[in-house]
Image 1: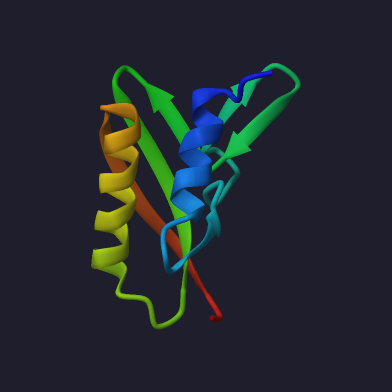
Image 2: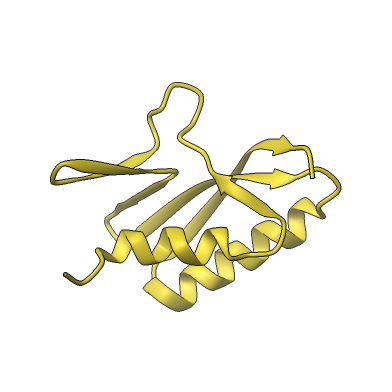
Length: 90
C-alpha cells in the first residue's frame, strides 16, 4: 500500500536536522485524521500545510523552521506554516 501524502510530509519534516519530532499542539488538536489512525503535527487543507514541530535545544530555530518550510513546499507545492511548539534536550 502506498503511503498517504501526509505520511511523506511527516517523514520529510522529521528528516530535517534539529527537528526531534512532530507535535500535536497543546491540546492534541493538530493532526490529520486518516481511516483508523491519525498523523499528529500535520494538518492539510485548502492548499495550506501546517506543521508543528519540536526542535533540539541549541538549534537555530528560524533556520530550522525555514528548512522545514522549504522541504514541505517542495514536496506538496502548498503554502506551508511552521510552528515550533517545544524545545527538547539535544
